[in-house]
Amino acid sequence: MKAVHFGAGNIGRGFVGLLLHEAGYEVVFSDVAAPLVDAINAATEYTVHEVGDGGRDLTVTGFRAVNSQTDPDRVVAEIADADIVTTAVGPTILRFVAPHIVAALAERDASLPALQVMACENAINATHLLRDEIVAAAGDRWADLAPRAIFANTAVDRIVPGQPEGAGIDVTVEPFFEWAIERGPFGDDAPDIPGAHFVDDLAPYIERKLFTVNTGHAATAYFGAQAGVEKISDALADPQIESAVAKALEETSGILLAKHEFDAADLAAYRATIIGRFRNPALPDTVWRVGRQPLRKLSRHERFIGPAAEAAERGLPTSGLETAIGAALAFADPEDEQSVQMRQMLVERDAAAFTAEVTGLDSDHPLFDRIRALVEARQAQG
Image 1 (tube, rainbow, N blue to C red):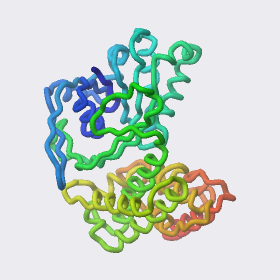
Image 2 (cartoon, rainbow, N blue to C red):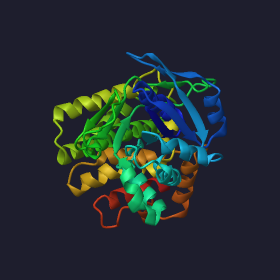
Image 3 (cartoon, helix red, strand yellow):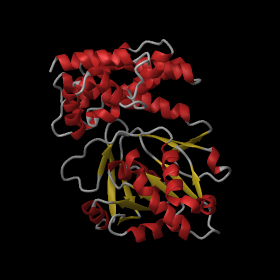
Image 4 (spheres, rainbow, N blue to C red):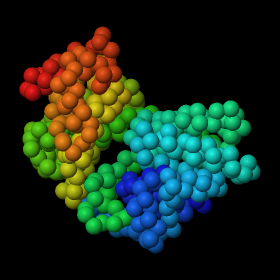
């Protein structure tokens, strides 16, 4: 069995690639970073270090890497007879993955089982986004190619922090992980991936993760940066920061309870588990890494505006999320391009224009004026 995974970075090696290896797949990593591709091909094994309670060292073998930028034909050939294709490249990069898959489907022997495609990204229905890019790239050929692929959405969750210097291709991760995959597209032929679990309705799992893990992680980073704290675990050692994060997550849980059939006690336990994960002192994670790309994280369907907008529409409380959004607006990292861009926008645009452009909210949305007030307050502070 063979799996091709786009994105040979820390998530690719330390999470998706690891689980595919443990499921018995030969793993082919595809990436555009030549030094990383060369380092992977120079190694016969690498270690995934789980740090924290219950952590283990896990050895990965049976892999290789291809540079999709300099050797696209080889990537296509690898996909053409693969069983699975996965990605961990970021939603905006999926459009660059799509042409490789289209070319591979065109070369794929029609007698082979359908290629199982799963995008493992921090986005709702990321596999559908990839499929749409594939359909667009295929054009008139898609009707013939469609039977050769199956597309299943997934929800993935594992904290993979910035890596220690000199780690090579080894990866440090937390022990906890979750990989939920929608069962329906596979019919009776779902892949056997120990550690992954298949569900009939993926939407609740995607939103629970996005509105709890992603919201809580970023909120901790922004509150920590405001307080001058460096590490995520140290930020949550501050009772005021922990309380502020907990309040924001209580509000996101309100949305999850309103939309999905979660049990309130189970959600409370889930929140406690998430905050406990962030407290893990063995993870060398910083507020600067987790807080990067604030403009993306403040966009319409992301971890702050997404749940806050839905809460406002339902008349549910949003003050905790608003406080976190205010902290995000204060995030200032000269090493992060989006942070610098956000600072420029706060100077160059009035509050209403900034709010509309960054959050994607209409001016008549019940959350709009609340965010505009936060922007005005940020601008007044200079």
